[in-house]
Image 1 (cartoon, rainbow, N blue to C red):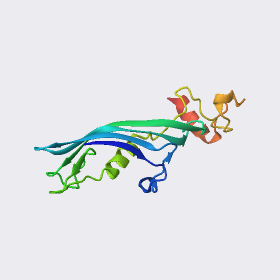
Image 2: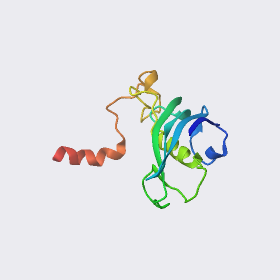
Image 3: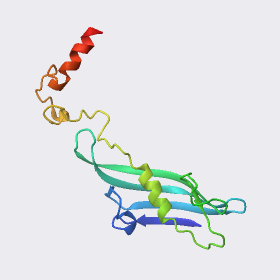
Image 4: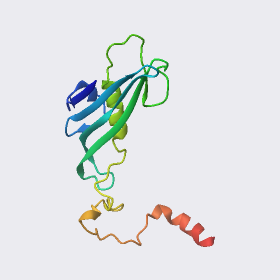
Length: 156
């Protein structure tokens, strides 16, 4: 059986997550029954999220994409720790794939999104965005709270 579609940005599936979707999440999957292991679902999830760069705090949009293999196994318990293995109740005619799709997509979202590897971030002293140019803070200036430790460093 083939599944194609989208999970809308305002779907109840996303209501309690701290991820802002910029586009619906596109789903393409194929489910195949296995006499030995239950049901295998293979496919991809693709969508775009809105976030702030963890270095410079500028807003950005990122594409999030995940290829997955999910196994619904009648011999598995709900407490199994494998993120791609799900319990399958005996005699089930339909699978609810919304929770596994949600989990897979959210696990793919980067924890620390950045606008680019070359992002210089913010100045620790004045907070200026260093991607826009140098802020003028002197590199020699140090936080005065570190002075007691400076002496220890020169003694060793």
